Image (tube, rainbow, N blue to C red; front, side, top):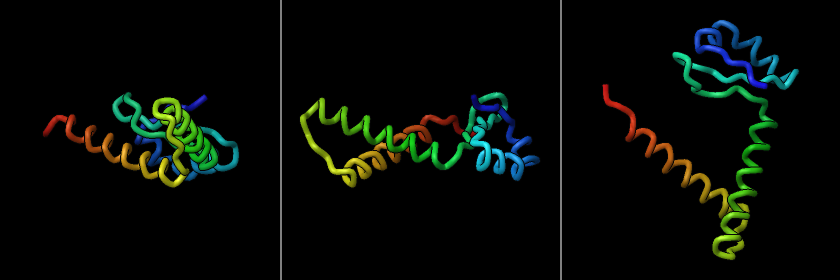
Amino acid sequence: MSERVSTLEVRQRLGDMLNRVALRHDEFVIERKGKPLAALVPVERLEQMRLIARRDALAFLDQQKGLHLSNAKATELALAAQGWARAAGKSKRPRK
């Protein structure tokens, strides 16, 4: 289970948190004003999530259109979708 920490705690305990992630495979959800902002996870976990997402995307596309994509093409499509999602998220933010 992930431990929830504030951005202030991250600034104060970053070294300790990195050691816990690297050595004990702990995970942290970083919050700002009580809302999840980011996660600190072991690199192996991040790679695992990416691999699962890529595999699921390929299976979905194969099921929908019967297409067979290479890993390179799937990665290219995933990065394009990620860029689109980031741009869409930025446009919905309230202006200050």
